Every structure is written in structure tokens, then in C-alpha cells.
Length: 154
Image 1 (cartoon, one colour):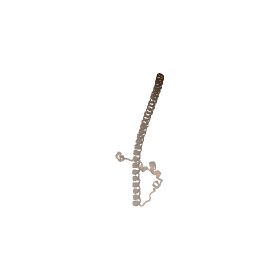
Image 2 (cartoon, helix red, strand yellow):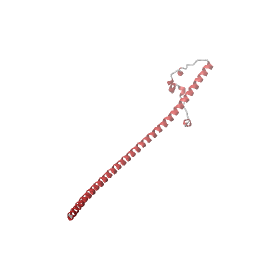
Image 3 (spheres, one colour):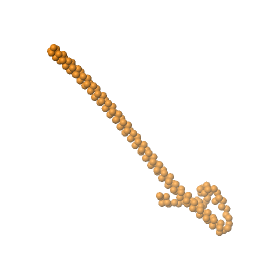
Image 4 (cartoon, helix red, strand yellow):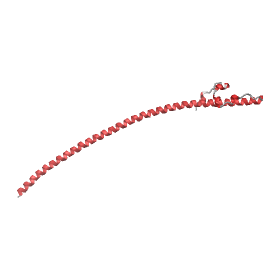
């Protein structure tokens, strides 16, 4: 009996070792599959990361282009503003000069009326304000208006 039980345990060892080899082979195959799957997943991850990086670089380039356009637009607008501001300063100076001239002329008329006692025809001064701005209607306003450049500096 001892020999038969030894034989059966020996054959079960052979079967067990065969099954252990199969199990080991199966584990190795699974391990290889997992490694291949992990490598493929890592490759896809690297590709996604590279695509994201490329998208960000393209976005940076687009934003830089827009930034340059905005800077150019702001620069042009600033130049236009400066030009308009300078023209506006000139016009303000002209309005001030013309207002002073009108006041002086009105004072002269008052003095003339007071000293001579004669009421002159002043219909040109009773015209609407628009005629004041049109020098062709007022011959005494045909003198040039002079303003020096230092008046307009800030």
C-alpha cells in the first residue's frame, strides 16, 4: 500500500507541477497583456498630453496676435485722440479770442453811443449768434487770429 500511495502522490505532484506551470504561463500571459495595455495607455496619454500642449501653443500664438492688434488699435486711437485734443485746444483759443474781440467791440460801441449821443444802426449786432461765427457777415472780423504754439502745451 505504501508504494501505491507514494505513486499516487508522485503522479499528483507531476500533475500539480504541470498545473503550476500552466498557471505560471497563464500569469505570465496576463502580465504581458497588462504590460502591453499599460504601454498603450501610456502612449495614448502622451499623445493626449502632446495634443493639449500643441493646442495651448496655438492659443498662445492667437492671443499674442490679438494682443498686438489691440496694442496697435490703442496706439492709433491715442494718436487720434491727441490730434483731436490739439485741434480742440486751438478751437477753444479761437473762441476765447473771438469772445474777447466781441466784448471789446461792444464796449467801443457803448463808448461811441455814450460820447456822441447818436444811436447808430447796429443791426449787424442784433443778428443771430450764427452770424458771429461767419466772418463774411462781419467785415471787421476778417483779421487773422494768431496764437503761439506755447499756448497749447499742457
